[in-house]
Image (tube, rainbow over all chains, first blue to last red; front, side, top):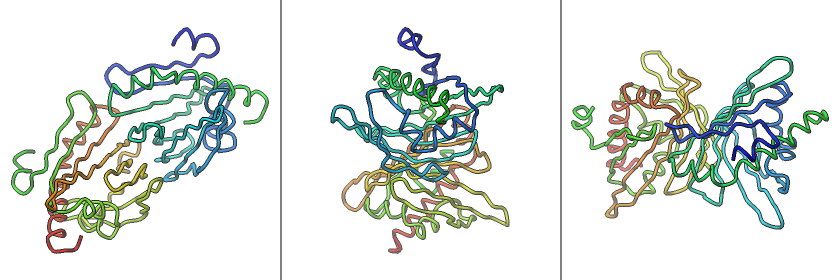
Length: 164
Length: 164
């Protein structure tokens, strides 16, 4: 994973040693407000999230505290759906649930923090908590880093060209 | 805790040894449909949830997949508020988030299962997952079992008298 990651991004993806948690950290040349918008505006989110080859169609989206979301990604006619609810949406932190409908009983509790580094840079920290180490490790082995990597690279380009 | 619990209920409350999880199990003389209603109908829920001395006021309640909830409990003029979202609501399982607003950054992911035991009896299993053992153990030391115990005893009476 480190080799793949190192080529194109500085995203850190780590398994917590004591908790069924995945940690991700990545810096962006954007303000916290821009990163917040990238994660809450459905038209923006759909353009960067996920691997390059996938198209994302938002089916439900209310990025407010107590709202919910669902989207479908598509590649070569194959569809993959995801849904969750927004526990809390505030400028410095988003807490939401996440289920891949291919494994409908699995649920992650995700927390995103937008940490202002100054000079127009922001650190995104993300924590994904599940209820078993087996489930956590299956996510890590699923190739998730490719989607993370390519998605954040798309977001970098959208920040650079003024889209976000 | 066992001594307090043993007096009036058979609720089992356990800390998972490996995960930041609290497990609760309790049997009711009710069908899965009755227990589902007790957890999704706001007028019913407000009557049994929490300690005897507290009154519960529902402020927001949409017990459907992607819905959300907020309630305020009151005792002697002191108010305590809680909120969350419903990740999934289906007849055999409810997944929701939970925050006590006195600790606004703390979030639990709660899963309830209604397991039909036959003969009009149902086992409620509840899993509460948080992101640290310290947070989990603080909940266990908070006196939560009193509210659980008294709440389920109220629900027993509402089942027995035909309210649920």
